[in-house]
Image 1 (tube, rainbow, N blue to C red):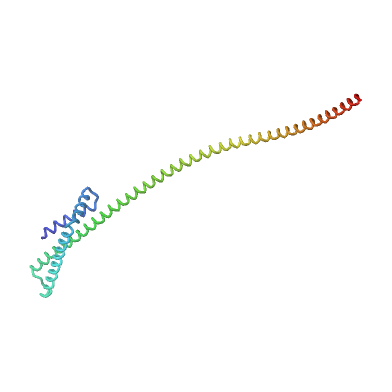
Image 2 (cartoon, rainbow, N blue to C red):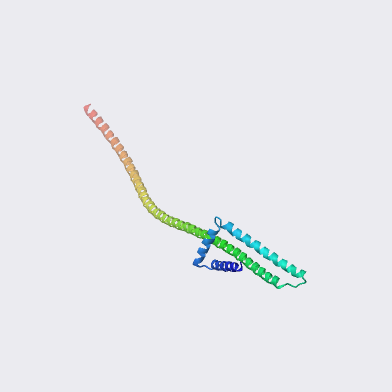
Length: 219
């Protein structure tokens, strides 16, 4: 019994040491504990833990009983009771150490598994953030390119507007010149109309004079 407890303690101490330090064996131990906690593993562990707990309480009860027997005998304990007391004390100590190391191993396995899940979650979040940052960078690049295109288009439109404005100014100047020219032509036309009217009046007066002179000669 004592040798078996020592072997269990040695095995648990080695497993705790493997779980504490990052070595290639830690993954194997974690995988083994994961498989142990599946299926019938938890039932077996609970059975062994319950058995050790019952034996531990039995050893403690035996030690208390031996101690009380010594007080009843006047404080003297015979050699047999001393040997039994030492045996039960050693067994209780070893079983307590086995249960404590088993609890420590279980907690270490639980925390390492939680840490692995947290690391995977953090890595997934980082990858997601990287994807979001990459998309943002691509969107910013696209926006910069679109802004450059819009600026080039604005410059083209501004130059086109300036050229059209110059054409409009030239057209307006031509219209003003044509208007002035048409006004001059209208004035000249009015003057020619006046002169034509004067010539007609003069010709009519000449015709009247000639007709009068011809009528006088005929008489």
